[in-house]
Image 1 (cartoon, rainbow, N blue to C red):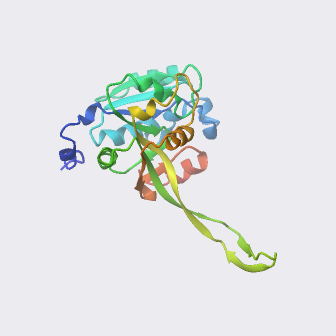
Image 2: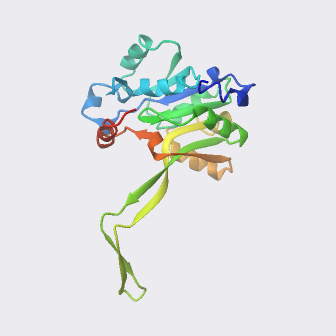
Amino acid sequence: MSKIDKNQKNFSKIDIKKIPVIIMAGGEGKRLLPHTAILPKPLIPYKGKSLAEHIISRFKEYGLENFILTIKYKSNLMKAYFSNLINDVKISFIYEFKSLGTAGSLHKLIKKKSQNFFVINCDTIIRCDYISLLNYHIENKHDLTIVVSKKKQVFNYGSCIVKKNGTLKEIVEKPSSTHLANTGMYIINKKSIKNIKKNEKIGMDKLISRLVKKKYKIGIFPIDDDEWQDLGSWDKFLIHNKEIV
């Protein structure tokens, strides 16, 4: 049974193919210089195809076929590349005449018929079950669902714990802490998008803070650490390039 078949029963009233997937692809990719001086970040080759193609392929596995790329940096190259490459999916573009941050261009989705949208950064590859994610978002009536991954961070020094009187209590060698990291993938509804002003430059973090203050319902969808590949910088790019996608 295919991935979409085993989950389709939960979505008898929803046409999965028509739910838009927004790939945020307008940035300059400065953390991937000097290569992004030639190619925009979504077109950087990774294991035989571009980053954007990896993202599109993942969604196609679950029956999603409607893709919208937000573009600005080297936009003509982006349009030419995808106009001549991708089959069996619909690809359209939102052009940013000025930089709008990681969320500003979503304002242009207000006139779309869909009530929910997948949103993903162009340097993020997620391997979770997208249909289960959508199901979770809809069943819980979230305005925004953030895909998160548990990350362990180690402090590579001895941490000195000090008493109130200024004397040493103990030294903890290489302590660690665990955080839920924002992977850069979301499902957002139209109600939330209406909180973005026309041509407003705003990051997704600022938009989320705005929604929290307005008491919108925001959920998290946890995934395993090995289900997330962050390819936004060369150190992470090279680490993941040794793995099998």
